[in-house]
Length: 240
Image (cartoon, rainbow, N blue to C red):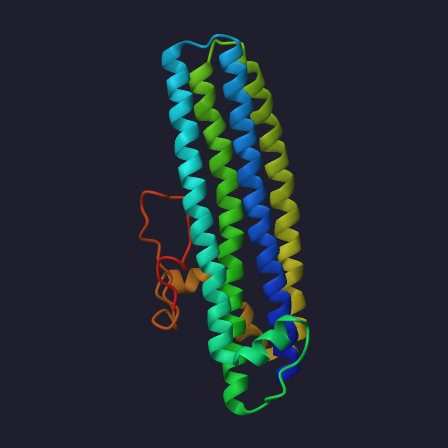
């Protein structure tokens, strides 16, 4: 049986890890933009044809627009999470929990609300995992698109080196993150004392709700933004 303290500690862990994932995702987007900029500058210095330069400009411009839009959506996800935490727990209890303290209210209603927020946090954690992994794949594929533009030009050597390095780094990060997230899942289960309540939280991931799972009406996840296929945001587009 999970206690109020168990849920409080778990919510703090989720909050910290979600913020870390968000920061890592933004960092990887920025690093990819730096790579694209370096490629563009090298191509310009080595006299890539005007038509090819325009293709690079279009690709980089679209990436910048996508990144800006995803930044807004990520911020909306985090803001919505904070608003929900305040709504379910109350402003004082929410601040206390997120600063590492415990909620003094141990009523059945508060326990239910904390469990709901733990489930929501687990789902949001899963979404940010997907964002990070999906962006890595998209960035790697985009370097292949750039290679098609500069093929036969000296800049292709730089792109090939970047693509090879990115592939190796992504593979390493994917393995590391998979292990880290599995350990995090076990940590949450341990914090919640194992058993039914722990499973109710840690098994409440984004996949079941995206497919119309048991509580899909309560937690609406939206993936309607077909023009941004690698985005899996639900804050700006409709998670309640």
